Image (cartoon, rainbow, N blue to C red; front, side, top):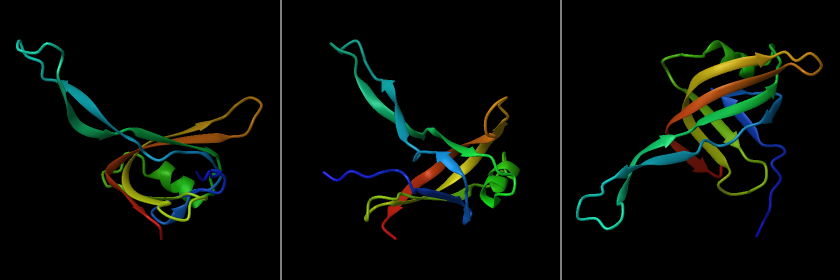
Length: 133
């Protein structure tokens, strides 16, 4: 089984690379469970509900001059979705994730003794298209 380092993965929004990224993930999906038990059931019965994409956080060292970070900061709450592209650094196949997402939040952290950092929160809307190029 192959193993890959995460270092070198990239993310962009509307073709703007987001610089100084420290940590991010690929949006995951989950489905609620719907209880369909009846008096005839001996055990609880469930079916899957609608699929919901979980929020995704991006952590970065803040740079107000970075075009990608500025896009995230300046477009919070926009009605339109933005196109994101994540490229994983290790695998040679199925390593590019392209999806639309809402921009939900952007915050800047100003610690007493540390680097300025920022966090952005997005929510994928629709499918995650996975490709090799």
